[in-house]
Length: 437
Ligand code: EPZ
Image (cartoon, rainbow, N blue to C red; front, side, top):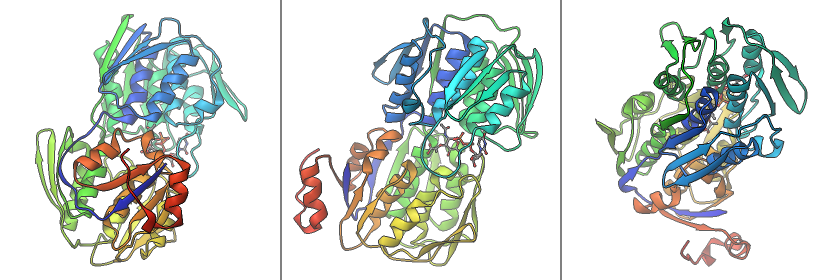
């Protein structure tokens, strides 16, 4: 899929969809709790969600989708082998490990995948299972865990990991466990809320980064119902997009606290931001102040999932900015594409260095989900030419109705699916004749 983008200011209103990364732990909670019917409200219709639903099918579940509600029938869930191909398409699939351990005290998973943004090992997930007393068999193609978990246990992570923490919680659901050095991202906190709702005694001590869970007294349930929080990364993408395009946007269905670090950075740079209950208004400006050193790190710090997007906005700053991504230092594919557009951006000693630059429309290629969002922003900011963004289809993995939402707020974007058109466009932008999508 190819997107053709042209300089535009976004104006109007946009509504943020349910959170992609809260969907996986919601499924996990339903399975681990032993529910036969799992209802997940406010689910975004995105590719990663559909891949997860296909994986559930392979495990013997059935599902249906009614508007934004997903209903999973997990009555016949079994310990089937799931296909490595589907499992490897997304990272969220890894929560199947903890979910099956929570439900059956047994699990076998192929290696998870997701965006190619650097090394993404699962040693900490395995450490959690080992610490709980499961026997773990680790082969090149799969990880298997089985045995009886300790009734009283302790898990201590060496590093903070989001899905690792989710897995540790899910596999501890029938025990009394203290988990140390946990990730406290809103999606992890939501998983805690999901379980609390169904009688699991679980609490997060944010000061100590510890979770205490006691699932020994919980009752069996037949049905579990969860509602996903708004997607904080989608909300942050809109904020940055509006600021970068000098636009004015009302962003609805947002929890501002979840993107406080992003709001703070944008305000420091000079964007005007007003926060209301459930809604944020942002107004961009022509020039911004640079940031001396922005560090992307675990929550509540600035999220790595918005690092590529903020790079584009900082090209409009008046001085040099530096960014260090402590979570995924190799998440840099957007840098090479932005350079093709004339950006003075580079990677030096593990830091992204951004100098003030005008960018111009060019032919560029997306490599992963968040860099696709960043390159869309670049295409809407770029001067002179239109931008041809190849591989744009990746966006469908994580942003619901992105093109429709963009068009609604005045963004000039056309999307092409067919090869003939593609050839025509690639031969020369001048031949571009938009047709409706
Ligand atoms: C989650 O991935 C998100 N995915 C990612 O969303 C997000 O970028 C990331 O957290 C960080 O916020 C889902 O929730 C499905 P980590 P996850 O384990 O859990 C290292 C998006 O675009 N690590 O917190 O896989 C790892 O290499 C994405 O929506 C180990 O060394 O991330 C990384 O450097 C992409 N060993 C750091 O920890 C492990 O066993 C944090 O990764 C696990 C992780």
